[in-house]
Length: 336
Length: 273
Image (cartoon, rainbow over the protein chains, first blue to last red):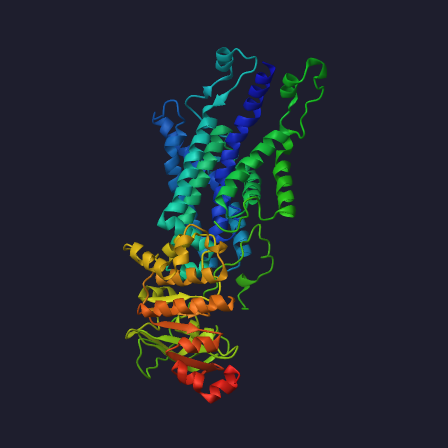
């Protein structure tokens, strides 16, 4: 019985939250990795693209709620998501036309794009804060739990409760669908293959008649969809605050780099690796251990490696270790 | 390389933020001074030009290919062989001359548009998509085609049977000779009117080289004219219907492969006796 309770506690506080968080990071990292693979630079504006998309979705959600339209047990934000993706798509394609296309014409080195994306980041950051403000926004509605702790206790008779929130379930399902769609697109469709070809060998892609401007535009649209989805799922799971989204840049980059930049499978692996490390290192394991060990050996401390305030140190630490010892990442990145 | 500050390489070596190996292709269509000295199926007529704003590398250089022929460009190192090929493909700043394909003036077209017109080009290096499977490489070769490509793919597999066995393998995992077959196969997928090969046997063993030459003859038998730059002059001239010996960007000797091989001056100065 004690082992079961330990397992439930672990599930409740580590595995389920980390899986949801990992799925959100993976979606974010996929966007970063696609831009790196095809446009050849690390897009520092990605966190704020996520914030912008989420902001649009929040505004639409409020409008829908005001009009009395909801999705029943599911969050209304899901209904607003396509609009958010479309608006964000317009934004990133517009940014590309206004900013990055100039550098493409100049055949600028990737590092120039990186610095330009830093500028885009600051501007997006300002726009989002100007429109929606710097405060926390909650926009989740509908049913809060798939299984609440109380129901679970009644059902199983266990001492520990297991809460599975709608936002967590939704995150996992939506992320799986998004990833499946992305991989199908990249590996099965003509356009997807042309994107991989362009990422692999730009000159040869040109010689094969692949239009770079089209590839770049489709990449931006996919990235907009991924970023908005990731942002909305994160916002539903936790809450929306522009500064938090800016900070998400670190774990997202860590995920993409750990997995191998430019490699979509790596981005997903990296996302989960970072999420599990972050949650695992900052969780106090006292309760779990107390269930497993006999009473006499019950630990006196919290068994927490780092305080949750330091969770970014975890991604940063992993990032450093990977860059020092295996800079190409787990999946050996470089090309999509 | 250039004065463009955007192309300054400083700080660009950090692979975690900047992906290396971007496009190097510079299209420079148009010459401003058309030339028409004679007719051929594909002809780069009296081309004079160099890279960017640099000095001229080619001087009044003419390269012509006719249907059913294998044409080989040979010459000492730095003679401008590959440069001549690039000029025909619109990747060199040519200040004088014309390029005509099948009677049509294509001087003002970009390299991509020339592909659309029916020119297949196999670069010397980086000529396959290493991370994609052999089959995907061929599919990408046929990217501009909207019709059914399966027939052409079968033909390519017939020419290069080894590719059919390896079609699900990433092309980057193949040997040097097999990679070259993928590269040629990719270019054939557009059903080009003319095939241009830039040193197809560079860096492969002599045995593989002989096999590649056999394959190239087979491709030529299907009726596609072939323009080829070669380092291995003796073997290349042996299979050539027409050969051009370039020296310092100029046409030094022209003739059939046999004539050139027999020409005492070519032998002495260039083939090593």
